[in-house]
Length: 397
Image (cartoon, helix red, strand yellow):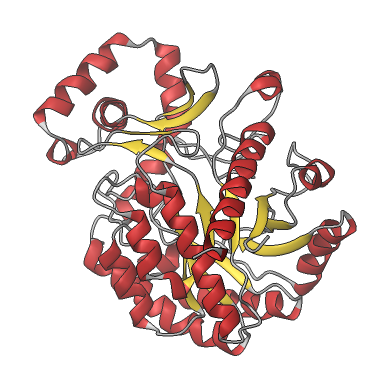
């Protein structure tokens, strides 16, 4: 096999063990030090401790996902310079430990948003989903954000009001818990009042300001990454649209081009997340893969269904709107180019993203939303089969 097959693992609290992961066929682990608060330095000793756990299971810590970017950096306020210096030293420590690929994102406040964590699919499995009218119902009638009505069409507002009036108090609380869910691997989430305070901090920060803060961050950290032989890989916005009046600046092919050109080196690269980019109907993900293949340092592969109304639902692989075949073909061709160029870091790590909750996993007491065992193993198997088919076809071209 060419592409490195990896699996996201949330550490010792993950309900899926390393021994189980090894049975999926994955060889690389995508993980992070979730117990270290955002902004703090990652000590070398903690990195090595986590790495030993992975290696003792016969696996490799291939990618860090993520070293979180503190909100002060995104807002460029308060202690942002201290947090940048901590980030630089964390990069150095990871490189010293032999870990050279770091995924990160620059999404303000919320890492990702969904409206349902257990959407019922036609085959009986459960998936994450995002419905615009449900999201608007939360924003308009639960959060009651000032000027929220300006962000939605009259049709969506009408649908949102009807939805809000139709659900019970328990369902309203479930919606709050879903949208304000903490990051995977963390038991923490926002309260409504905390979330409103976070939004207020961004009141005077639009897309222009946020992008400028990202460019500043890149110009600070990428030289350190380059000197340490580390490949940074920015993750696209999920979903690729403004939420709650918060700007998004990693959502389109133009955004990606501007970011990668800001510091033109392989150390300033992209996490090609087909699901996040594909959630925007305007994004041709295969074209994005082809355009930036030389700067793709990591890939999350899954399919989504979407339309021009912004509705999208995560599907099993190869049933939605994304040309997964075309994306994978570009990754395989890029690996060939890297091998021909003599690059030691020619292999691109990929992981199956957001598998459905299915079969025995449905009855398990604890699973992280989107990160069940069987659903992701199914996705990895599909990706593996597709890769074999593409490689064999290329041999005959």
